[in-house]
Length: 182
Image 1 (cartoon, one colour):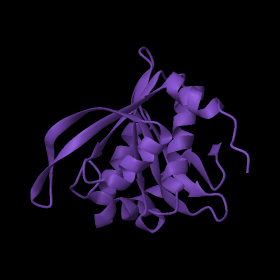
Image 2 (cartoon, helix red, strand yellow):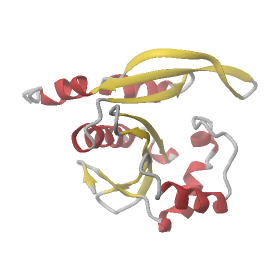
Image 3 (cartoon, helix red, strand yellow):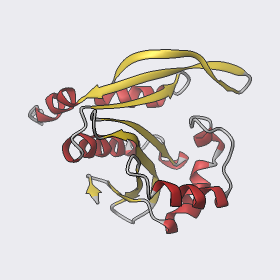
């Protein structure tokens, strides 16, 4: 368990899948995910069984500390222990979009990747229309590495996929600075 101020990340469990399926298939959530086609609940269970045996994937449920409410999911995928890098993915339920819980969940996952897994780099991709996520990633210290132009098709239009990353020393530098006086 990885605990923050308002949420915690816990290993994803089978009991979470039905509720996770509802969150993931909300049209506002789904449009920002790579796999645009909704998965069936049966697909969710199949995916769960495959990923829990895969050393290159870690999936966490995001839950509130106050009432243990399921908020969403974060994943560290394509974990390469040899070269020390992994990909970060996240989705948060629509009712939590403006609550800052996605920012906190991302920060906790980064801390785990850099401090516990000793990753040297964490990378992600975000669609050009997902400005809310881009602001979060930039605020946390991710840097744009490049773009895959016209990479996905959503709502009748092609969009770029923006590639972003953070290096271990960038994370350490940002998180070793003293807190500003209040």
